[in-house]
Length: 190
Image (spheres, rainbow, N blue to C red):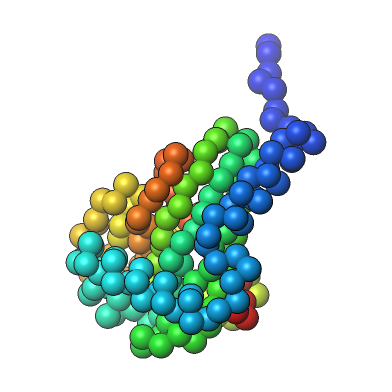
């Protein structure tokens, strides 16, 4: 009976991963930019793009208790990878907090990609839980209304009852299959 080898994180793999994170940080996603006005301008542009490209998100945005907009998330990896982005939480159209999104991954991967994503908090409880957490991590329970391949999913009463909905769009790069699972969101002061 043979067993398959278990992947190990070696120094070389760690070095490649750290190089990927460095590349990620250098891709113009607001790292080192402490300007709240710049983040808000990017959030406005991202919402305008999403609402015009995916009209089903307009109703969702109107019914959401809060919307977290990450205008640009950059992911890169070679065996070990990571991602980073910055954005803003809006309630009733007004920015109330700024957040960073950080994602790490290991496994068979190579490449880089950039995309925008928006989280719609459809219940007050989901929004409160997000805001109270010192670091909230997206899980498998997030429902998608725009998938990574830009497929729109119809909004119906069942979809609108999901506590957290997500839209991922505007992908550019060589990796395929952007998801939010494992992404950690942390409040920041820009």
